Image (cartoon, rainbow, N blue to C red; front, side, top):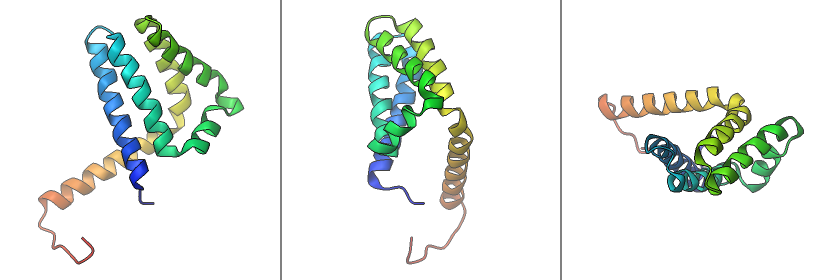
Length: 129
């Protein structure tokens, strides 16, 4: 299950979006940062999952209400209602990605652990490394 280059770029977009969301909230719901992070998040999702999988993910019948909330929040942020839009968007986001949170947590934990072990323990490099 190696990630391709497109998926890696998508993950980078999503990490930058998460940082910009945090920064936008800290800076009193800065509309520009929140709007930029929304675009980065959507691009990251589409790059990570692919166009077809992303469309089927967002428009499944059991997730349609959360999709409407998420995109309504994005629209509110873009139309100069950043505080209300942020909370509407986050409620839709948590509903959409609730099932994925344990997977992301496990991936990040295993990646960080692998990195730290490889970086700081004396491990001999093989030809594959």
